[in-house]
Length: 209
Length: 189
Image (tube, rainbow over all chains, first blue to last red; front, side, top):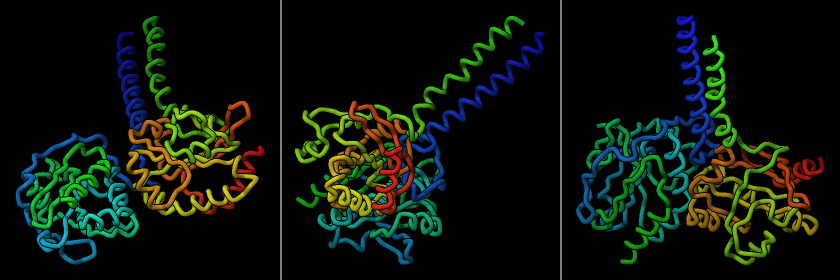
């Protein structure tokens, strides 16, 4: 009787754990208001540690220069915009993940805001060019360059202090002025998309100076 | 043996506990009713008039002065919603240009995970003139089963303000005319 109860108990506990895990996944599976454009092709990593790195750049100091390959083939260097445009850098953690997959399509429809503030946008992830090519094709035509910080892996993200311990980057925004000086740095909860208002407010502030 | 019987009740409770939570995250179904979606009254008097609201206070969908309300669940960040915006505008124009329809059928949009600022960007970008509401904290999105976007819900409102969902589907409306015909058929059932 005792042995029967013990086996019964173990089996039932296992079943309850499975049931709750499945239930939890059902609750979290389609969060984030994800677009139908990606259908079931998005990998959900679950809730991640909000921030997992320490910034290595300071507002008011010169932003580290870099050269990275873009999805359209040519290489882009930060300093090529010096004296011409303010530069917004948008690091997103990884392709084919929930929040990232919607962030740049949002920037796609605000080209005028960037133009009016004499700014260009550079989107960067640590993914390879082929991955970025396939992923960004789902977003429609992007007006800004998408750069790959894949090799040496995450070198630029690391130089800015936004490379996480698992090799992906933070969800970060940087604004660099026409003199190449860092004017704004945003690194917050990787699980949340930054309100567009934050970025636009900072851009307008910089452009008004 | 008694302990096994006693514990069976406990197991059943443990199995069933997640159900009410899961139930709350199911998308609305045709034939059912909406969860209590509370929206903030718009500050634009024209939109207040369109919705038939008298006081500038929070309201629910069945309080909208209409026989059918179409709810578009969208996001400024969603590529399909961006692509769909001209078709939804065409639907709105078709309704407002039809003297028999314009007071009976109303259209509202709810931007899930979008702030007021982001809703305004979407509105200006696509020249949207029907009311859009922000669901910045995903509160409404959670109530409707965290559906992907765009998602459309059609609700029939009865004269006594009770209501019934007649349409609830993921994906764009594609053709404004065909969508209206289909809603008309569904509302007559």
